[in-house]
Length: 154
Length: 110
Image (tube, rainbow over all chains, first blue to last red; front, top):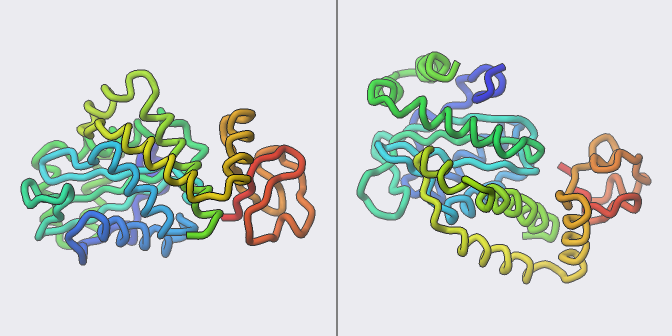
């Protein structure tokens, strides 16, 4: 099992194209999927927790990438969800530097802070190279996206 | 939102505050690429959340947090995951907020 992805990255954990373009609604899309997958017991409450995390400091890390994350009682197992937006998400309200790749990292509350932050750091570092980001954005199927991520996250 | 949702949010917010206040937290955030300038905003959010909760739940939460570090625990299979005592049937299945009569932690039913 990978420290980053938990169980093997599954195509169902990918959103090839986000429907919405604002941070709050994108967090809603992500947490709804986490709920449908059975990893989160109350998606609406988790969205509120993720929104609070953004108040500590934006999780947009530049180069069109955001890594929202949380440790929560509502999360039963570690989960990584990857979402793309070709149009871009106005993560911090403005239209400058829109986010095209969103990687949601969730950990159960019992996870040590250091372990969670290590997962977040590894995900963020994995998509820092321009080539990786390009491949993730250009992949045509969830399976291809999953393969790219497996290669960089191991 | 209902009371239990707010208590869970308070718990998760405290996890986040612990991370944010830990030594080296700012540097770790900056290394990942996050900003780390919103600690006062989180502290305000915590105060607002506590103001929304009934005082008795805030009291129970703070008391358990002081004692154990984590004030809210899940119930799985009718067992409190804080002290591992088997709960009375009514407490194990209740869909409202309750406190473990053995350890005093607030019970959360995922």
